[in-house]
Amino acid sequence: MRTTQNNVEILVGVGASIAAYKAADVVSELKKKGARVTVLLTKSAPQFVSPLTLKVLSERPVGLDLFNEPAEWGVGHVTLAKRADLYLIVAATADLVAKLALGLADDFVTTAALVARCPLVIAPAMNTAMWEHPATQANIRTLKSRGALIVDPAEGLLACGDIGSGKLADVRLLADIALKAVRPGAAKGPLSGKHILVSAGPTREHLDPIRFLSNPSSGKMGYALASACLDLGAEVTLVSGPVALAAPAGAALVMVTTADEMLAACKKAYASADAFIATAAVSDFKPAKASAQKKKKDGKPEALKLVATPDVLLTLSKSKGKRVLIGFAAETEALTRHAAEKLEKKHLDLIVANGAETFESDQVAATLLWPGRAPEPLPRMPKAGLAARLAAELAALLG
Image (cartoon, rainbow, N blue to C red; front, side):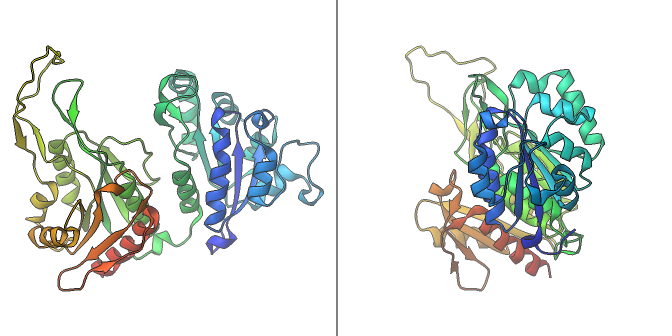
């Protein structure tokens, strides 16, 4: 294991999925974060992504033909696998997953997998039926039993037109997971031994089985914070509303839907938590009575009676004890004033104020407020960058 991120050697294997083109973004993200990357392709992967593109982005030759390796590699599938700190396989098809589970080795990607003794991270991408097929799931269980980390595919519209699980996980998430898997020092990080509770995403309050009240929160900020805390050695419980994100590797994920469910899940984790970072955009209201059946459109508008949902952070802050509490304030006006009011009302140690327009964005401009200190406006930055800053602030607050 190397000691600095700039010395990390990552192998990226690419399968013959329609999602293979996203491997270019994965390589780019890893390079931006200082890793050294070598790309290996299955025989059919070039049908979906250009080896030249990957060569330019990685600034290294690309492994494709076992019998025509660059001279400097020697026996490439052995040399590369032995020097790697991590092997990340993206766009892993059902066929590739099966080969990896069975130990078959007929191309650069699979032969290197048999030689590599570093951590193996596999990100599948395939049709929903293929992903859910018992054979594929049995192969996934086999790989997990051998220590492979599987980054489950996301849900959404697939290339074939189906809707379901099968989309390659977010490329930034894959890069973060890869670097976390090889990043030394987490066990001795400033949050080592601390249990951090993070809430993320929206909640949904159903009017009937089809319709619900909600908001556009993507969960990206909360998931980035969970990852940043893990990077500093924390034990993390992530309570999440409905989002299209894969949980950071190592986090204990609890999925919820409603505000009441989020409060119950957070209460359970809060009992042993040293800190609570509340990023979730919890719905403020719910229908007084939800319909058990879909409400039909009959041309007659119906008055909708709403009642308040529980304020998760306010409720838990009443039994704060020695915990550190960090909240978020998404506002459309008087940003600093409203955030300061929440800071005091909810007994917070830090609040992050940002505009509501950042809900679905990967970027955020925020202002930090502490009790008894002047607000600190921050420049617009990626949410992962803000998450790293907040994780460091949390470590300082916990002392």
